[in-house]
Length: 549
Image 1 (cartoon, rainbow, N blue to C red):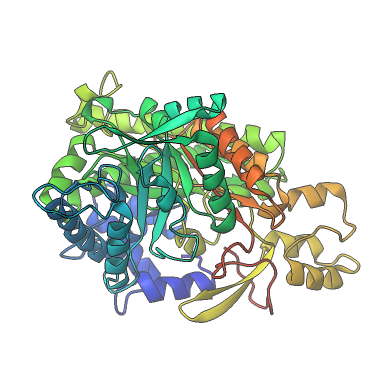
Image 2: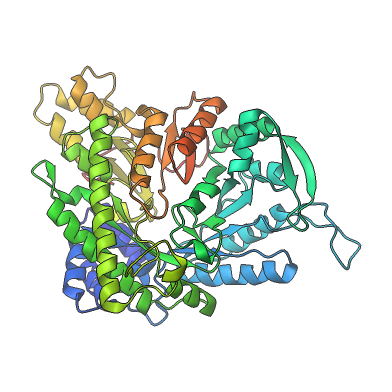
């Protein structure tokens, strides 16, 4: 494996077994899902062309090898049901997975509890219980679990939920408000919106829809949470609608799932598919085919943490092949991310990924049989997997692969990051190539190291456009890029719309509305420095290490 020092340290700290090398890890993982293609699987992993999700890299070949990253669990409106789900969450986190929940079925705070003289506490205290339980667990002893909590906009406790992270609480949860067409209809008319008790369907209260909207936008502006899920759009695009309505996603929002479903993910490294300034579509398609075959084979060797999850997952055989390194691929092709050409190129790339992934799933379906719930799906003819494509954030994978994350633009051209307690400084290699040997290049590099940006340095316009960072790209363009990728993605797309510090809650509202208009399934915003514990900042202290993420 052609690893940076940072990538090697990350592998050693989280992924490698005692005494194992990265090359041996690739052999272990590919051998564990061998379908007669283990050499092919090993090569794409070893060449960093494709990487499966973290639980697969960590657990493949082990006796209790649970290989999926994404799970959704139900939350029933009873003490027994709630704490049964809490137990199931613990088992999934222990195995390396992340969990998503809809808390929308829980009766609101103040509602009567049958058989007692008491009243219900509502969803929020139970979400806090789940959060504290996550604090006490570490996934396989290597990392803490992650959760997504969803609450319908029509739930009577929605205002408390929207404000739940304002003071820094729920550190192990991302939260999202589940929005539907009925709410947007009320918002368009400036009308009241009914909050409904899920226990009996009674109208609990009628709120001003604009008041709810403003509360949502202010809190997303203040701390990045909540995000929003467009639940009706998710269900309009549901590939297996006969099995029920989807109400929740995995922790980063890219994988809508039914209760007890799971999905294993993997990502193609687009930056490694660029040859002589062009996408090598033959290499891309070969890698996609290999990735689909690998992810499908994972289902058959996976050791699921619960029999119900095993049954539900095998009935739909959902996989999520996605991409990483989009921003680096565009830079390598001298195409600005924030441009019409950037959108059109991305559209062509993702169309190729989609077409080849679906074709491969159909081919495997013809050979090995379709997923059992095919008759509940939108498909005609053989199809191996209920869903095939997902775009994940690739949080650790992109560091291992040495490329930009998911479909995100470059966050900063220079930055520091802690990995296993060690500080690494990153400078984009294409920037070094641009400035090396140029008169005054050393001085320019020092300024970039301080700010993470090329802006204001007097460089040609085409160079400035090519190296725009996330905060320098108009927020509306972030949404356009997500929508372009969503057109070619079965599941959903993880993407953050980066906002400058001076952005307003009104800007957040416009982004949310644009995302819905363009057909996104959800959207998340983050205003720079709106959290005290922000992981990345622009610019770095030393930038001596020649590596990149």
